[in-house]
Length: 449
Image 1 (tube, rainbow, N blue to C red):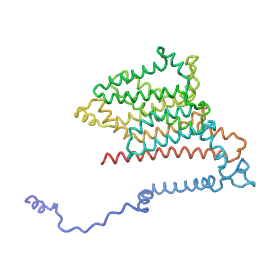
Image 2 (image 1 turned 60 degrees about the vertical axis):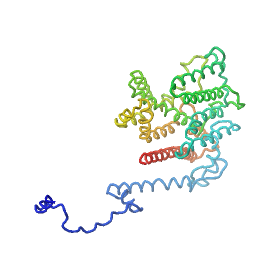
Image 3 (image 1 turned 180 degrees about the vertical axis):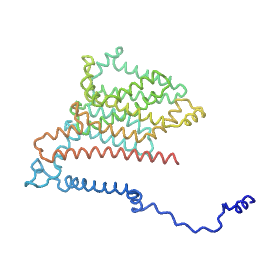
Image 4 (image 1 turned 90 degrees about the vertical axis):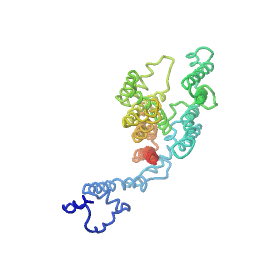
């Protein structure tokens, strides 16, 4: 109190001598006008950019709406429906062309009588993927096991017909008691390895061994058992089917393999680190077109004379390895963003390095790089169009093949086809982008809670 009185006498009082008048309430942040004033007209630069954006929308949107909707042709059986009746008449998109070629754009040249198998794969994939993408639904472990373990085998059997007749060839590679006996021997070896690695937890080792046996049995059944389905060569695949197959395989392989490469690049073992760095830098330094050309035309030259690998399988391997290298760098960026205190805290709790990485560091790193992972997946989905260069007809390749039909040769057919393909690619890419944003918000809310 004495100090306070002394400060008052010195003229530097910290206590107000009178009651201050009430201040006006803060401006509201809700409402359309408040949002527009804050985001669109907050400064002269924002005003100019807003006006430029409005002009750009005025210049682009009305012509697109006119071409694809207002002036579009919706009914017809051939090109005459999409030709102008008189000279100078504006004719928009030729949607009968899309309807006539829709099956080719979705299935490629897949036999018409067997397309139900593709529909079953589409439906089964959607049924398993949607619950896996909803965070609040239970049973994620079983759902993930079905989607990443059983679904690829079932899809392989349905799309190809199974029964690859590889038993004699594999029997030569595994001589002894025959193919099935050698397969059983490999399964028992896998069981023993898992048990040795998990000596401290016998129940978990047993479960993993049973799971390994089930997966091995499914794979063996897929390549040897005759399910009575007609064989469909991959050269007949095309359209959206090939696009989704390449994307799903690339995504499924690149994420776990990219994580392993990122961990290997940060490993303290020189040999592991050198191998990971060499792999990543090699694949990141080679254009994807070069990878596809090498996998399609050069790789068969290095294989033995009696051994051949399917063209689509070669492209799948090349795309998966290419995407894994980029995914590794994305994950490595997330690992480097984790502060050192997280490692020290885990060590203080007595966690081993492997558990520290699996339980503490890696989940945080993956949450940080969700936008980068989504960007890599979207880029992979769009890069599937490059397989057309090596004579694999994806959605864009099937479209180019459909455009060669003289029965639909009109001035607007080309723009209609590419507009439809653009809408398909935009729908998938936009969906992946929005889901990644929703997942990021969900994880951030869970962390704050």
